[in-house]
Length: 313
Image (tube, rainbow, N blue to C red):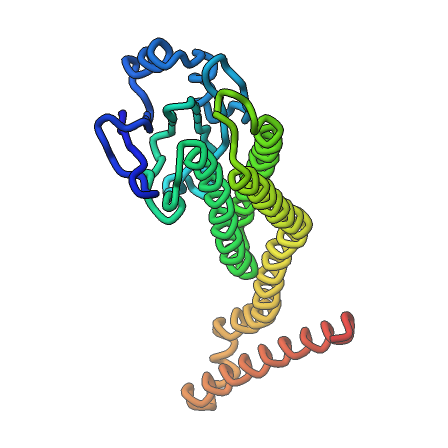
């Protein structure tokens, strides 16, 4: 799907003849138009739509080609798996071509205000990707905190496996953010190339800000990954401990009722009726039940005393 935009008073607005061309999940006809009309290399075009492609910056004959990584918009169907998409930016002196994944949002919002020219819009696109990563890291941290609360009471591995899934996603995030940082550094080194028409001092300062933001984003992702990895064994131990506590409780119940079953078996035989034939049966059986209750309490307190003596609680 193709949408065209233009820069009007510092804002991005839709226009039929705009110099900004946004291709969202291009069709075969649009791919042919990109390779023939805009002279985009087929490999670069395929890389822009390949989520597994590494970010890179290439200086073509009449344009600058950049493959950048951006997080995929999270949905409930992803089941705690945070995926990554590729974004293709092709900057010419008189136009900007964007090849975006299906979940790419419109060129709207605060990030796309006060845009003076195409190179600045090109840089704003990179800033949006970094901000998207940062927001996803905050969501990951909130989800992990919620899962930690459930793991404290869990006796199964379901929530623990979800934590492993999030930890795996963080590894891919760190790899993508790190690769994006190298692309930003190379962009700064080639800021005066003819394909972009050169970057103004203001834009060079913006590139420096991009490098700093990306480095902070990478550091935040690494901190989360290190914390998740360091506490994973502790979380697994919590699940095992919860199961052990449950088994202990069931064992105590079994031990308490074991002597009661023996006594109740004797009480259910005809000998008990014979021994209490001179006592009214309501009184006899009430005393019998009271005796079972006292025996159960005595057994329970004996187990508690043995536990305190053994473990010093």
